Image (cartoon, rainbow, N blue to C red; front, side, top):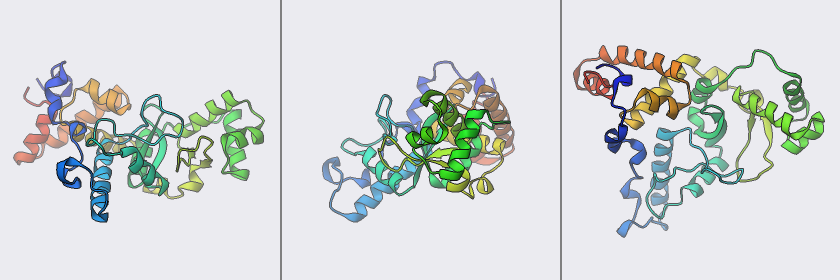
Length: 269
């Protein structure tokens, strides 16, 4: 059999090697596994390890059923006693973690260095704006940034239809939230003002989607097409196209690296 789609339907045997099952580096802890709290270099190693793991698993969402404004969580991915929500809160307060709508429009965070890549991969363009979307853009253009309450006052729209328009504009990466803390009424910005160089740094959409899926596959090590589709939120057609491109590219590489990467896609199984 050949291709990810032909991997066994019971994926549990493949999951032992996944990055998501790994923990933060042991050297970030003191004796007995307790986090070192007194040495600045220990804090730095913990932070570096967290950022590395976060970037392997991004976009990262807040914990399910948590309150609005909660920090992203690497659930069951860190050592016992390590407060990853505190580290995430500190990083987003410094704008190192930025909020957006990825994975089918759900809220998630990515590292600021990777924002152009994930914005290009997950952007859902709008061919035209409806009257509510135009009203929201216009209000933010002359009065922004605005909280949701302020935006309702400026537009005169009811909460539900206005938020539907805002969420669609967020999925198009036209509007973004500045979620630097756990405040509920956070400000809304125009992406063009908040991140003026975003689209000049972003790759083409297909190239971005290929890279995101390649990273996801590297983090999971083995995956079926169904798992990649569910894990990325990019859709089966996109995943199938990317798999074909990856298989072609990796099959052309010789040596151990090429054989190892082809095995991830189930070649020869």
